[in-house]
Amino acid sequence: MLRVEGIHTYHGYLHVLKGVDFHVRQGEIFAIVGSNGAGKSTLMGSLAGVYPPRTGSILFEGERISGDSVESIVRKGICLVPERRQIFDSLSVRENLLLGAYHRYRNEKRQVLADLERVLAIFPKLQELLDRPGGLLSGGEQQMLAIGRGMMANPKLILLDEPSLGLAPLIVKSIMGVLKQLRDELGVTVILVEQNVKAVLRIADRACVLERGEIVLAGTAAELMNNPDVQAAYLGKGKKAI
Image (cartoon, rainbow, N blue to C red; front, side, top):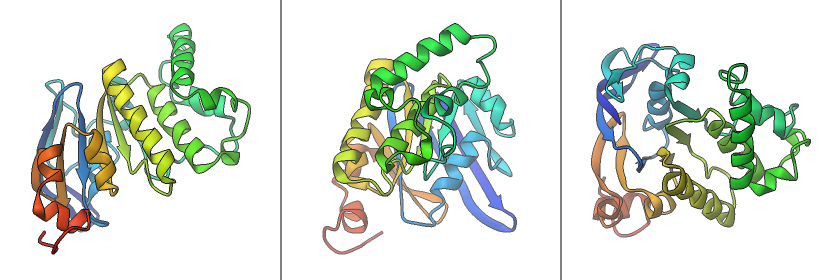
């Protein structure tokens, strides 16, 4: 579904991603883990068109999208749920959700309203909060809202950047359950960036480790969970080797 081939992405003169290669199959959860500063958010931004790679290519369903605008990439079926949620504090929950479908609201209003009901079925807590300003929600509720807003774009591939950041363990477990539901019941493909390695490897199909802008390990989630280097560096087991 998605193939990333040797991308190099810069922030000004800073060389952040250094020849990143990987692929993601349709209908799977693919996890990207790594420490702070490894380039994870830059990688997600590159996939979403926020930080176009200087070299290399990104192919989505066989079509090259590297260099396309963010809006074009959203229309093709890729949606980014950014780090720290970035909802609109002064807008209501309903307004935040409908903004996720801004690019198709005029021509697909009936379907957008049906999608709104689907999102509320996934996140019933939001049904109770539709008229509340987003800024008055708890952290967990805001993360539900951010994911729901992403789903309103009707994506084939959803990119989530640190969805567990700052959340209590029970909320993290709930969010991870929702991501499994998106994959298993709706067929949505998920790319998930996380520092909570244990939580993400429990739900992912495959994963990779990004360090200093390069992928240093890749495999199934089970393989990475049992890898001594990953255990030492991220799971607090043994002597750090990565």
